[in-house]
Length: 461
Image (tube, rainbow, N blue to C red; front, top):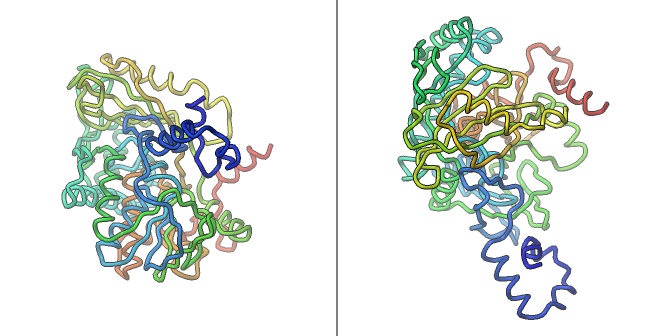
């Protein structure tokens, strides 16, 4: 009985029934709720997202500031930190707790590669745009590295080599695309050792890194507060607008220089705003589900790197050094990605499939310790959308459609949006603009992607 009641937050517990409880039981329940409140939507993953607890108060008054950021994930906190460092007054509103969304579920990879493949981007957009994409990933990784070093954030940031496994034909095409993009990659043979699993003939590229995303988020939040920023947790937003935000509790934040929606998928203020946003923002992207497992491996048994393949669906693998009980390592394997909410059979047995795939390559992989999933938003152009909202006539910014590049995409969003607010130029503003038109859609039509239409039709049937 006690464990059931501990899951009920005080505001939703009927006050008449609460008063009727014996004093001793009321005190026990209040103490348990205060010491370990249940946070909805958190995953029991290897970053211990499920252990994240509220550290900042809920908003309980009307405030004025320069910038209001909605969402305390990578994109929101990066934007807020950079603006606070530039002397702006910044308030962050978070509906649950820091890192409660997709940022805290990511596998912690900062890839110097686009998982849609550079040769695909090259065929669609040419060498110049592909080079910009490659440069933007390197810029994001460098920004994270600098921030970790400057703020002394303990998040196991580790530079690693990346490996891509594919057919001989695709490896040759991807190697050529890497070179055309102005970055280095070479074909290598990793051998047959258990430390590299089944990754033998690969494309090797440098410049990537791994970290613990929850530790990074918490360090970023602390650095932001140290620069004068304010975070309000358990504060849900109801009506975001160009220069103000109204919360579910009826409190308002007025933001002189603008509002930033870093909520993964932009929220809207009313039915008209929802309809317009569906046409010009949501219509460019579509949700997909991605899964991950962590498997015990002996310490040092797998070379610390990021291993990617080009299968459909693709896989990504990394090592968490010292992540297992007793000092062993963890092998984090993600993949089995599919369009969300379309085919019920796609959700069946996904974790077993991931584990089987991983153990078929790494003979040292052992017991499954964690399993979790999260939503990513893909865009038809394979590029995120970070900047001023297309349906904004003022200072209203969004960060969405990171295509699964949660760390690099969120960091780029923070760089691009903060520069826009500060009046600085950014070399990637146009590349990732939410207002960009789909090249294959006539200018007189809304920029709705083929996949968005297909999935919408599938759901309605």
